[in-house]
Length: 222
Image 1 (tube, rainbow, N blue to C red):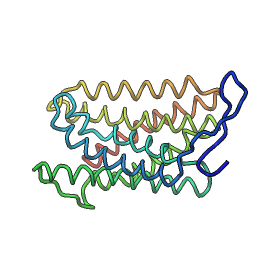
Image 2 (image 1 turned 135 degrees about the horizontal axis):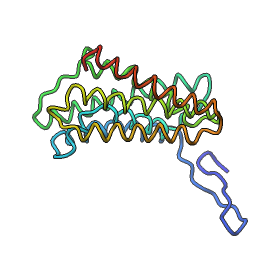
Image 3 (image 1 turned 90 degrees about the vertical axis):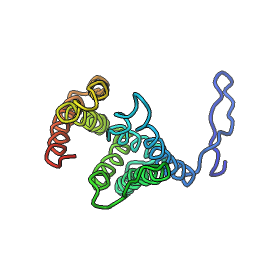
Image 4 (image 1 turned 180 degrees about the vertical axis):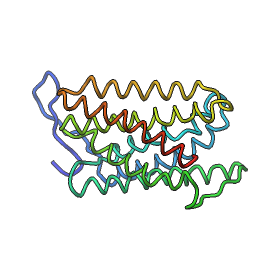
């Protein structure tokens, strides 16, 4: 067995076969490429009827960053966690680069600046996305509950903020759906926790995290 294959049992036969394994470098490359592509699609999505509000929201980007970190093969560990958090930041900022480049090429001038609110937000949000990607794969149900609770908090917090501040111009449908998805994620976290402590961690992270996300939005004026 080499670095690119792994043995697996063929169901019903008891025999083993070699299954291709994607090298770590390839997984990271796919994640980085996916981040750029997400930024590109966001630019086009903002002009698509029915998708403009979704494309203008940060919650989906956060979820994509978590998914791409998982795709990259992040693992738990003293060194792996900070690496995953850095990767999360890189992925979110690459989304900004993809969005910026595509928007300008389409004739919609956009400036990519370190002082931009969303670029700055990409640092803490990306670090959180990397941490969530690690925690959601942890064996400890408390960490998994916290990861899902944090994801729910981002979605619900942004949705509530949008209903309070921008629903008059964008309509409420997108934000109600985002809140509903966030609540569903939180329910999954609570219902799948196998211990009382796990359920408390999931629910507490979701509720307190929602308050924190909402407060940050309102304070920073994003």
